[in-house]
Length: 200
Image (cartoon, rainbow, N blue to C red):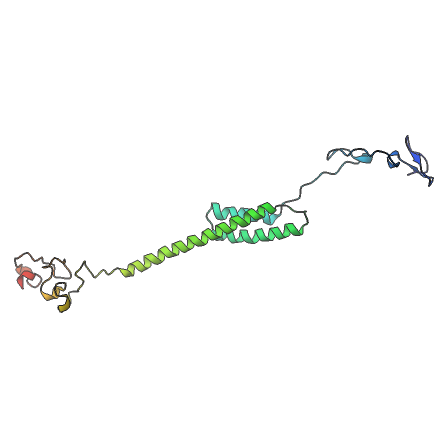
């Protein structure tokens, strides 16, 4: 407004002041152009700037990808879950000033997948190691086939045919154990008199 008219179209109101034509009742408002163009009254219309992405959401997505692609499992999966949850809280609290909720959700999902797969992998390898360690103790290397009686100089009558100390040795075809390794072939080997069951 002004004390005097400032150009064509200025009009005087009942209060005695002069006003520009665009402030006259019923005057059509000029259309607002696209961002960056001149708006009403010669001012440039503001640009619509996108909301910045939340840093924790980006970190969650990266960590989640590493847990799957590089098979890092829970080493990066758990941090992906933590940063993803934190990012979603920060985005909601920003009231639309931050973006990246989709990245945070993707990081959470990938983080959980990597963590679960990592735990399964560690459990599998632990199970394989446990089986291997127990298998060593299950093997009795002192036993050869069916002849499991040791040559200790004492004849076990309950296992007469399996005990080389009973003078039978391998005559029944049970194999050779200890020092009694002469086969029962019907002839006595005098050089191994005490080891050949045919010399007894």
